[in-house]
Amino acid sequence: MTFQRKFYMACTMLVFVLPACESPTAPESSASTKVADAMAKDQSVVDPTVIEVPDESAIDIGDVEQSMRIVARLSELSTQENIVESVTQDMRDRIRLVNIEVNPPNPGTLWLAVRIDCVREFIERPVVLDTTILADGKPIDSFTVVLAEQANKNMYQKEIEVLFGQNDIPETMLITMESEALLLPEGTDPSKTDPYSVTEGQRTQAIMYAPVRIDFTAPGPKPETESTVESEAAPSEDSTVTP
Image 1 (cartoon, rainbow, N blue to C red):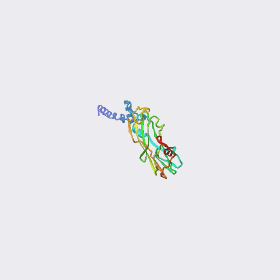
Image 2 (image 1 turned 120 degrees about the vertical axis):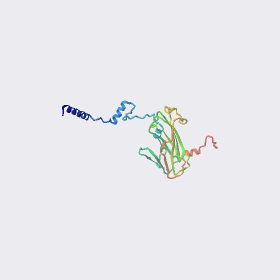
Image 3 (image 1 turned 90 degrees about the vertical axis):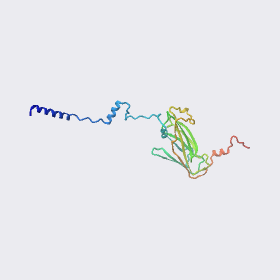
Image 4 (image 1 turned 180 degrees about the vertical axis):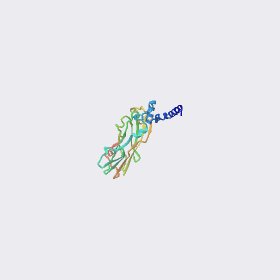
């Protein structure tokens, strides 16, 4: 074999060996690297590690439904040894049902304290809440209130008398509530809002409440209270009293 032929074969082998010695192709960049590259090129990409705090003003009617509950409890006006109250709560300690047992002697009046429990305030968009309290499906009282700043601290409360207009004490009574909430437009001034005439906004009737079951162990005629006797005995303003 001539020297020229040997030299040619050596060069050929060198051509095939050199590519094999090169570094292997770099693997594709990881997902995190791709996100970082995209963020560097496009500032509109959101950093997944940043937690944005929701704007209190950016609420809708669903937030209203989830942030309030109407609860009625036995009022201090009717706290007696023969009247026993118990409550049923869920895993979040929210009241689901109130039970009141009335033992003899039956009272002439029975008072409940109805309050609105709010877990948030309504700063930029106030809420008008219109609620009717019913006893066995019949309206016995109502209230309308504007909820705005510090609604979660200055909770509205009203005392209601559930035996008003009853001639007899029933065996049992169920107190329920029907409510409608109106989420007012952003920027509404609650101090200048007439809750009885305002109509603009988002409405919902899906307001949660805790029903109250009242059981009387000795049903019968309702006792006369001092105020009832006085109202029946006192003459009206246009009555003529004969000496």
